Length: 154
Length: 83
Image 1 (cartoon, one colour):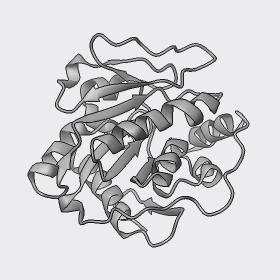
Image 2 (tube, helix red, strand yellow):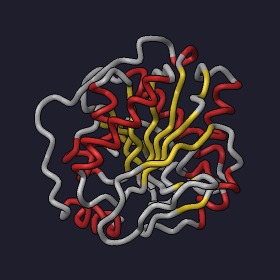
Image 3 (tube, rainbow over the protein chains, first blue to last red):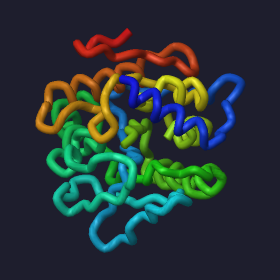
């Protein structure tokens, strides 16, 4: 897919340096059928009453908290760099909390987290993301006793 | 997204990223990556295609559980096979 190569080139042009050394690695520590799983998307989803993401050229490193089980039709999408049509028709295309509930009902995973997290993936300057907002999300995930997270891009 | 995964993993939350840009995954090196050849806006599968979405999420969950080495990248082909 040539356009994906172009997208990668554009993304890398932001100048984010390569991460060297061994990536951090933590095993789930229990069978997935007993694990609590949260979702993190960069699809720019915003729940009712929350402030929309800033979609200008400076991007937006903040996040929104999405209650598990919220009617997907209640979500709005604020992201300037992808076609929202598929996600509006079916949130499972990139923010699969209804599908995660089905997998929990079947015992594939233990349970879905009570909350999931949405960023808007256009973040050309990542310092605030790395130093402030991502650690805040991780803290909220920890506080809920989540064992694992599935991250899905826009 | 890979940056968020690295921060979570360093604090004891196991993570798996679905990604569609190999060069970005190689640059950021998330702890675990399931690489899919799909468009932005529907990386888990087309709207209404529950089978494809489910196969993709389950492949990611399998990687979450079975990855043996930090930074592992597994490729999900169009037939839904991970390698």
